[in-house]
Length: 331
Ligand code: RAM
Image 1 (tube, rainbow, N blue to C red):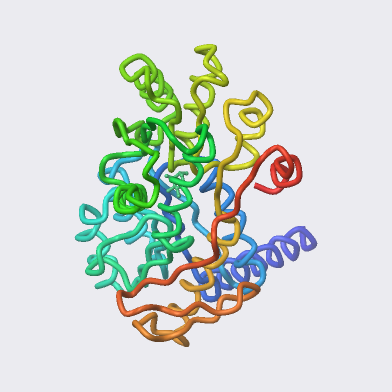
Image 2: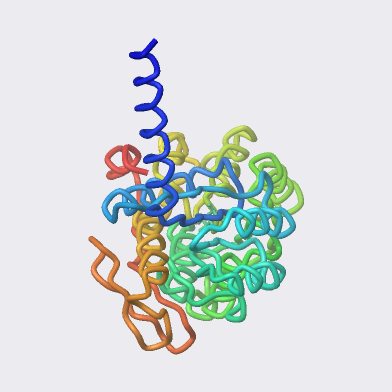
């Protein structure tokens, strides 16, 4: 009796101590993604967890809606406000629609940043781009030209949602820089909403409605994978190519089947890692995130914020038959 009471007492003290420790010490950083179930964001979450472990006393709340909508993200943001998180790092489905909810978060003292797909300046302290947007647009055009004889022919764009900040900026860059690729003709732009089945159907639609299209450029990891599958299933390998931004782990089959010769991406693990480091320093208060300032970002060194309140990471990297096996093991 005595022993069991003593044991119970010890357990109760241990419980209080753990509960107290996690309440007092853990900084809660929410990583809000466009939607759950996207391998790109899962890789970014690996980086977020890595940063949290290195920093110590940080808990990552990886969350997002089940489909790629701003409404779904607003619900998620409201629930994070109710939970009292310390920071929100969001990849937005719409630059403007999430702003009122994020402003509410900021009023409650939550540090808000965007990464990958940006939020309008009124809704965030700063935005982290994976790379230079201009360079990403140029890279997509170069990849399209590389798949065409003499760089000449028709291509179509298969994007994510119509409101997706990052894809819309990259498509804008592609259109701006088309003059530097005189052999390329853009036939149509369609939207697969970063859903595998819709992207697949939109890729099929391009092949039936635009038989002259020789390359589908998808600046989305979901779209590029679905389109390469659609081309394969239609028996069009060698006639229609797919390229754009993809994950090596998801695109290895497309490289092997010949649906894709090459595609590009930056390191999503480093992106999630860096976003987490930024959020941490903003919460700690040893960085402001203001234009012109710098923020230390662990093993990635430091990043500098430009006059628009944005920072950019490294150049995208090209994957093909020579390096796909090596990288498909990483992300
Ligand atoms: C998808 C998402 C993400 C984008 C990548 C390239 O996973 O749309 O926002 O950065 O593709």
